[in-house]
Length: 341
Ligand SMILES: *[C@@H]1O[C@H](CO)[C@@H](O)[C@H](O)[C@H]1NC(C)=O
Ligand SMILES: *[C@@H]1O[C@H](CO)[C@@H](O)[C@H](O)[C@H]1NC(C)=O
Ligand SMILES: *[C@@H]1O[C@H](CO)[C@@H](O)[C@H](O)[C@H]1NC(C)=O
Ligand SMILES: *[C@@H]1O[C@H](CO)[C@@H](O)[C@H](O)[C@H]1NC(C)=O
Ligand SMILES: [Cu+2]
Image (tube, rainbow, N blue to C red; front, side, top):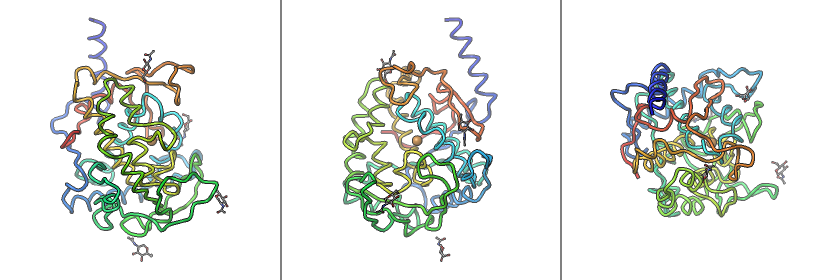
């Protein structure tokens, strides 16, 4: 008991020395749903994203020739770690850190005054509502679909996909994506593509899917239910947002380069809100509950054990590392959500 106390005290001290990732928080910033933001705030957020797209990268071009902008630093980090941050116990903590860092960059390097917004996709189902989501608005949103590109037999067809070409409207029509597809870190200039799949999205982003995540009693199964499996029919809310927006050809459907689409952060902020909503139902217990494999889909722990609170999380060249323990309580990270599930 005494050792435990000493250790928690020590970790508290450590946390407070590393600016921004913990310590005293007088006034947490409040993450809100996109459509509930004032229009001027939505435009300010989009402007900050565009600012990040223009700032120079910190990642050395020798390791990632395609990392041109400060925004690309994050895409490169995600690409580089894709095989070790998905289908593992630290999937949610790593993405909590990743989204927190993005929010920090928008605020500290691009003058954004608010918090990272989230996209509550349950508000955009059934399928007939999906494309009308305020998130896809061409002025006060991220723009919508690309034109329909027939599927190439060598590609995996997302059921009910409707686009696949370069986004046709909105603030990111002229965005140049430098990285991807997939694991490549080479420079490969492309447009931003979307391939909306409304029926798929509506199935996997619906309230019943969310409820099955929320009703799990331990972290391991909650996280696994949220992330789903690797086949379309095993999809869950995480896949629903990625393939519902990215389909077959959009960056959101690329497990490696998905952060290339600025909608990524809206989706992951909402997944983070799902986790925090779940934690808040029994915070005493759930701010310490973590499990699941250290290695990709190693559910039987054949390659290694489960993660623990001490497990390290890294954002690579962004030089902003943490442990799972640091990510367990958002009150220490100085943000909150206006509403919980
Ligand atoms: C990718 O990860 C490896 C191993 O951690 C590291 O050596 C390399 O510098 C990383 N590259 C990028 C672009 O982050
Ligand atoms: C199908 O896609 C592959 C890989 O993207 C490409 O090499 C090939 O040329 C495409 N084939 C057709 C018929 O478009
Ligand atoms: C995109 O580029 C075209 C051609 O340069 C320009 O006419 C258009 O205004 C640009 N759109 C946006 C949203 O920046
Ligand atoms: C590893 O985590 C899973 C949940 O993902 C859990 O069911 C299992 O009991 C854990 N294994 C051990 C040895 O704690
Ligand atoms: Cu990811």
